[in-house]
Length: 346
Ligand SMILES: Cc1ncc(COP(=O)(O)O)c(C=O)c1O
Image (cartoon, rainbow, N blue to C red; front, side, top):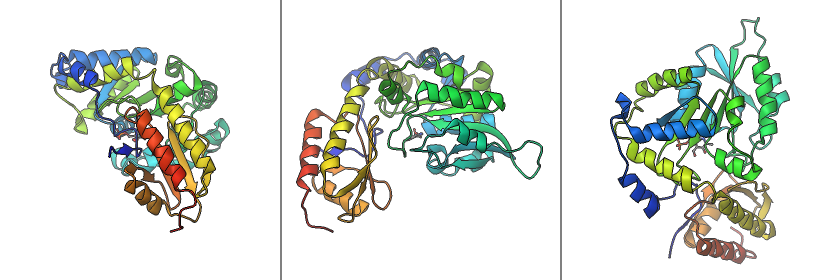
């Protein structure tokens, strides 16, 4: 039986058309700045978000960590949500790479409000405190069940940052899901953020790669940091080509993933083993089980039906829809979820 892999949108394999495009890429040594396909990808993404320049990196963790390192220094502090990827899932990299402190905000579904940001800014003239330097947002918020910021919300937070001379970074691992759901365009982002990390290897379906966007000076500094982290890649154009293909062909279809996540939500809302489903906004479904299953037991039960999911805490489970979840796999999953109603408790 085919596997339905709902663990993450990172599990997608390149389509035959994407692979064919990758094979045809014109490449050069990108550490020498000679790879035309990498340059084309960096330029295209920078233009999309109306930022000056871009830097192709192996992962979203690297683009985030480079940005944090470039914006901060020891004795300074970053404001972010407690559930944010940069804090929870980047291996403690903020301390390791930047040596900066973190002010954790308990936002709503991973999202901050302007008032929360303002409340976490340290008084500048008191040496007991680190110096607040950077605010980092995540759009969509992964641990927040794919909740997204609208441009208006971003503009309001950006205004607080400008007022207090703080840099604003976006972990936009799934920013195209956010833009799709909000029915907004990426251009305005460039005016509100000082740096943006976008991932090509999540919902867009490329096998690898993220791009960091910012001003020319910021990207020049970031290029040095990328080199020091070992992220300088040589004939990376083969990978950048996958990203270009994804940007040209896989953005318009993201609404299909959102519709599939909605279909999963509807069935889960009827299920007698579910206590709560975080209202679905994009391609992530996070739900809480009641006492009939633990998260781990439920994931095991699904595995018996060839469905893979992530246990996201003792009673929490996460599904993520993506390019490789066909209509047939969705129907199979919906049937399995329905069939588990009335099952013996574990
Ligand atoms: C919100 C968010 N940011 C950053 C990353 C890091 O991306 P990567 O796995 O490419 O390092 C992820 C990965 O899933 C993510 O979900």
